[in-house]
Image 1 (cartoon, helix red, strand yellow):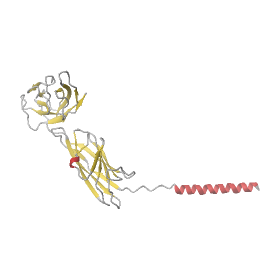
Image 2 (cartoon, rainbow, N blue to C red):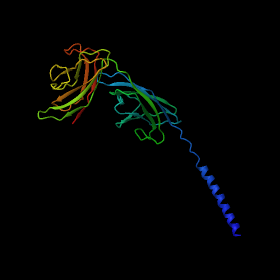
Image 3 (cartoon, helix red, strand yellow):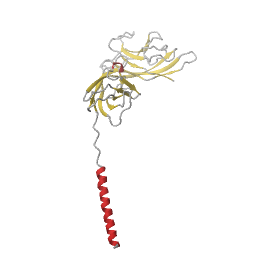
Image 4 (cartoon, rainbow, N blue to C red):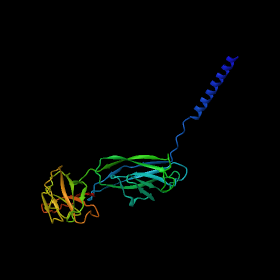
Amino acid sequence: MNRTIRRVVVAALIGATAALTGATAATAAPVAARTPQLAISATDLVYGQPNLGGTRTGTNSVTITNLTSRTIAAPLITLPGGSQFGLNHGDLSGCPVLSFDGSAYRCWAEPLAAGETRTIDLGWSTVGRGPATTARVKVEVANKPSGAPVPRTAAQARFGVSFEALTGAFDIVASQLRLAGPDANGISRGTVDVTVTNISAETVLYPLVSFDIASEDSSNWDDCAAVLGALDQATCLAAPLAAGETRVLNLEWTSSHGQPGVDPTVHVYAGADATGTVVEGTGAGYPVVVVLV
């Protein structure tokens, strides 16, 4: 009798376990992926030739599409930032709210109707020289204009970033100008390494290097073959520079007014002769970042 009862209990337990296992399997079925609400794409960005300030500019565009059947009030687009991506927000349309945190720009676009596709044109600038890379853009649904993104609504894309090969006579870059505080005579001094490369096919006999905000004293410009002009408005005449040759000039920069209100730019031109006459169309420049030490 007892054996019969035990067999019945065991059978009941096995049946209950099987039923529970089946129920658990049914409830653990995969959850269907959420249907995306937005799509995004972007064209490639090509930076052109640098201007005399050393800045390159380029444009690309970002296209977003509302994949839903309702208006999305605040599409949030995240764009790259940093030294290689200076967004020209003055000409930017379609982003009534824009923020920048040092590493990325965030654009809260205007409402996007159901099924609507919109393209936003972007202008960029940089003093970078490369190399080519890719960058990411992202779009999300924000909970309100200027608000936080709604979780699990992001779509993203990548675009290429490249730089036109330099043309002309020169390439030029400069280190930071580390400017020490005023000495006993009220003079602040610092040095900057200016790297000049002849990218032409011919020797430049008279490379001319100068700052747009002049150093007040150029008496210590020992890396120059000659110093032309007054000491406080000087131009460095460098030794001849062969085709493809690179040279570093260590130049002292001084000021009786401390840090300048605007960072200076260093320029290089080909001279027509040793007097400092400039050959037009040969110039190149680069911004010099001043750091107080």
